Length: 354
Image (cartoon, rainbow, N blue to C red; front, side):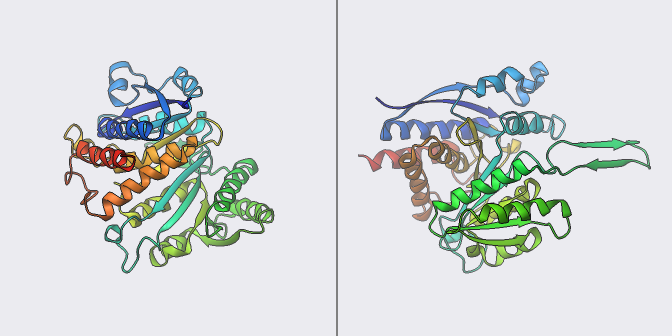
């Protein structure tokens, strides 16, 4: 009897509905090829829902998600609504309320022509960034004094707990155990941000439990430099929330841009959320121009998390092959129609088992 997974999906805003549609189309094909099933539930949360109801995402929705195996998110953000309002309520809401403490970002180059770095190819760009996802500068501890006056003061606190730091570092070492190179790099700024000494000490203690794993260290400014100059130095990296947010976008450009980059927001063993990282791109909404590859890669990540590893690898391989052979000519919006790319991937998947 085939396995059945409960999947929620939130198309969200802008191009979200279009790219999610293609992602689910690819999921349909993967189900037919590899013999598992999903039960899916659409959730309406996003800009249109907020403008109609005044509701961002209620507690009942988070309770419902806890009963799911995974969540697929399209995109959140709309120029008609205050910047950050929906993002904090929905994206950060899932991260914090579901305790999705791992932000997992694979940075993998499929074809040299996508990489802006001179003389770098797929053998040079294949890394995983493990970003702590629930603490640091994004913990939500902030405030203003005398707001709107010349004497205004604003503050935001970086918060790190031993539990939070240790669990993301340990997750990074566990990921490295299953990779050929078996190397973990700590990225922090403990020389200037002395509170991040908790990262340095915890990393050393956890590393002592994994003698087969090579370790390295880089401050965030140096890590950005080395990622551009020598991306092949990185295998698995682990870092605080803010630095992870920054360096993963740099990584996205090295692998070919936002059009291919996907992320997982994970709590191992519990419901986790998967998304493309390109944002809502409202100028392309409804035009069938957005490239859905990043969402399809999010589907691959979701399948891997669910334990459908063969299907996950199959989806990734098909995308890589279509890019390498030039069938997918570009990841830029408008070069291919959104549904055209989805059909390419679906047809190639079905052909693998023809």
